[in-house]
Image (cartoon, rainbow, N blue to C red; front, side, top):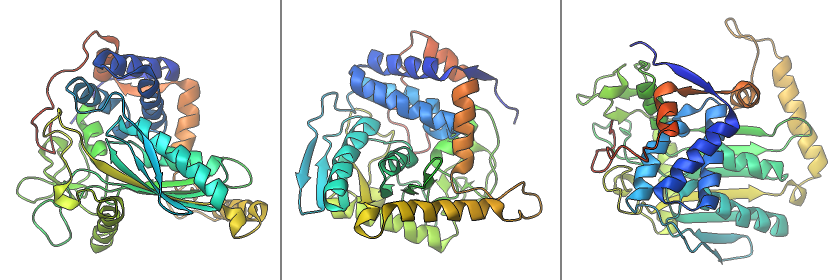
Length: 355
């Protein structure tokens, strides 16, 4: 496969174009702006799977009623340090960011916050949320559900989603320590990104309809768990905590992204926030995390590597460069963002692996 053409776009222009597309689809300005900010962050980090490649789909779902345009977001405090944010199926990036505000407030008040986020839509990159919590001086863990499109270890059909997990911690200087991973070898959005750029994928990411490894992103019919049974166990953990614990569907019962864009998705997300000062001296804690990162940076790299990077560090390096020099966007997507077309009316009724 040959690469599609790429255009370098100013970050603010990109954010404005996406915001305007969401507004044209019917989303009010405040959630549209937050969603566009989130997607710009993803593309700047080089995680294009959660950036502009999602806009046409989001716009179609918004226009067809699959997103509550005026959600009644309510925080139900269920204990001293526990609660559930009822998101009323609002735009995922917006309502989950609002839910995080409640969780941060609780953690700062009580020392910890264990907060479920129920009935949301697709919420984007988890690192966006945990990074914000770490910038508030908190340790954060987040996880969320996704479409059932992963073949469990030893199985022949799809059951769980890519079910990502992320964590973060403040350090005494520089960006927080942030790690965000799908429990599959790669997130589905990475396959979407490869499709948009007409690029092949490694044969370790996914299988085709016959269950055989494939390098063609258009032939993908099942994703593979990371590290076999270990990834399988982690994706089960996510559905138990972010699904069943909140009274939401789990595993193969989770709603499909594309099946019916007029229906709300009812997805779950989960935050665990910890204030270090309830356990140790917070400055000493941040310095110790800083020491850890410096010692890793000073380690002699293995053959073929230029240095030992922190988890998520290369994404943050890309983000800083992109925010200054411009963000890479598939030209076809950029042309769509500049056009008067709101969406292409192509996703509704498609399977989990829709083109």
